[in-house]
Amino acid sequence: MLLNIPLTLAKKLIASSGSMIIPSNGYSMYPVIRPKDECHFSQANESDLRVGDILLFGDRDGLLIGHRLVRVEGTLANRSYICKGDTNLHPDQSVPFDRIIGKLTSIERKSNGGKNRTIFSASRGMVSWGSVIVRLPFLSAWLRRWVRISFDVR
Image (cartoon, rainbow, N blue to C red):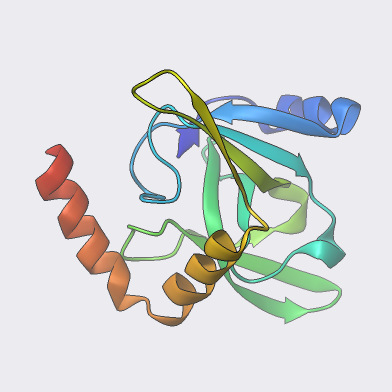
């Protein structure tokens, strides 16, 4: 999930309202987040971040990315966060807390019938999937293959 909004603007938006909605594109977080899903993020507090959470952060190229937290490194004073898309084979570059914008709270998905479905990040299914994909990273290769075949994504 990538979006080209300046990091400083995104941080100001989420600080002023406490949350922000980002439309998804791409398949890096499939099947949890799908193209055209609306992802709701709340402002991130460092003490609330847990492995398995989906974080919105700015990468070094200025893109906003929503990927799963898979590991925390460093000391309390100098932590860095390692995130990875569920279908990506390798983690992203480490992210300091000052580049983390928010934490996923829910996903709005429109069905073919036009009805919206809300999926909360704290739901049992979402928390369970987060644990599974973090603990069994080989599933990412399988998911990646599935996405490439099913959606003709390269």
